[in-house]
Amino acid sequence: MNNYIKTVVFLFFITISSFNVNAQEFKHGVGAQLDIFSFKESYTDITGLNHPVSVSAIPGLVYKASLSVYASKNRHLHISLASYPFIGYYITSTDASKIVAEIPLLVEFFYGDLDYFGGFVGVGASYAHSAIPNFGDGTVIGPQIEGGVQFPLDGKVFAAKLAYTYGLNDPSEALFPDRTYSKSDRGIFSMGLIYVFD
Image (cartoon, rainbow, N blue to C red; front, side, top):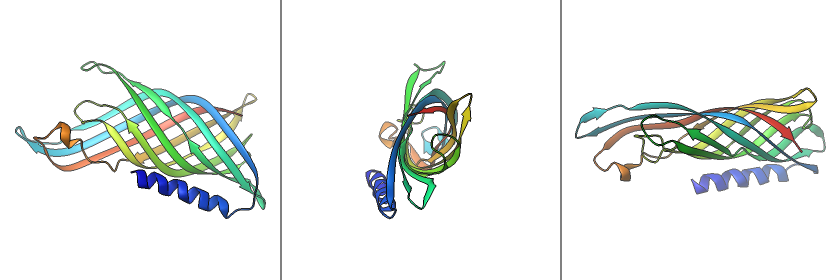
């Protein structure tokens, strides 16, 4: 996974170097986000064949940090290195409640006015830890795609975003040595609303 993140960062700097950059702009913001973790597995153990599924919606807070540049020929196209760290709280009646965290790193393409209205899409990688019961360490590590729109409201600027992370990591086999896995799908769908400021 380290190599994947290094590749994303490398491609970002290669892309930026191909533009005649004449401005940089740092933006950040805070908001609310809902992360929906999805775990699907198939394994065999002493109880036979099992197909557990878990879909857990976890609310929390998100922070936006992005460094943007634009090409001199088109000041409406911005390319950013962006991250949206998330921290949430997973509440369950059967286990102790857990803190959930996600850290994505994205190359983001924004078309419009960074201080007003525009749309954006991004690609990159994300690491999330949820500790959802019965699914080992509950981590999701893999590529992320995201998109959204930024808009003014009452003199302030907000961004609404959607993202999906596809988990590439295998089940936590060390925690369940008696299981023989035939399938493991992990993913995160997230929805956020962020107040953006300088």
